[in-house]
Image (cartoon, rainbow, N blue to C red; front, side, top):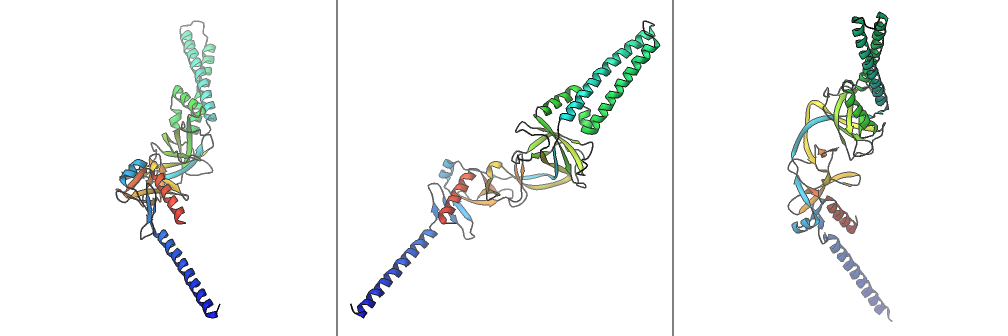
Length: 335
C-alpha cells in the first residue's frame, strides 16, 4: 500500500473516532440536561440552583401529600434552665416519719385532753399524771413541727402544705415512676416570672418527647454548685421511664417579654444531613426543601422565629416521600 493511501486511511479513521466521541459527548449532555422523572414526580433545578419537585395534584392525592398554611404565633420568651430528676427516697422517708409523728401526736393529744378532764373532775388523775401527759404531748408536737420545717426547707412550702393523704399519693406516684420532680436552675439575673405556672422539660435521651409540668414551685434552696434561680417542676412520666439523677433542661417563661414566629407541626419536619428541613409549596404542584433555622422543639411542634413567615404553606404529610424523590434524583444525577 502506498504512503498516500495509508495516510488517507488513517485520516478517515481519525475522523470517525472524533465523530463518535462527539456523538457520545452530545448524547451525554442531552441526558444530563434532561429532567429526572418518575411515575409520581419530576425533579429539576431552577436558575438559582434550588432543587424543585413537581407533582401533579392527582399524584399528590395518591401519595398522600397534604399542606397547611402557617399562622402567626406570639408567645413569651423563655429562659433555658438546667437540672436533674430528684430521688424521691428522701421525700418518701420524710413523709413516713411525719405520718408516724403525727399519729403519735394525735394519740398524745387525746391522752392529754383526757387527763385534763379527769384531773379537773378529780377522778383518777393526779397532777403528776397531768404533767406527764402534757410533756408527752409537747414532745410529740415539737417532733411534728421539726419534721414539717424540714419538709419546707427541703421540698418547698407547696409540698409541705399538702395534707397527708395528698402528699402520700404524690410520694407513691414518685416511687412508682409515674411522676417525677425535676429541680432546675436558671442563670442569675434573667427576668423570670417569680412563680411560673408551668414549664416544658426535656429529659436527656428523649429530646423528641418534651414533657409539660403539672406545676412549678420556687425551690426552697439553691444548688451549691449551680448558683441561680431554682425551681421544682412536677412531671407526669408515663410516656417513658425517668430515673433519678437524669439530666434535664427546662424552658421557663421570662417576665413581660414575648417573641413572634410560627409553629411548624412535627409531621412537616424531615431530618437530612444532620439538619431539620421542611418542604414549602410554591404553587399547586411545585415544592422546594427549606432548612428551618433556628428551630426550637416544643410539645406542639417546632417554633421558628426566622426563615418562615406567617402565610407560608408547608407540607405536613408526605414530606418524607418528597425527600426520597429528591435524593433518588440526586443519585441519578451523580451528585
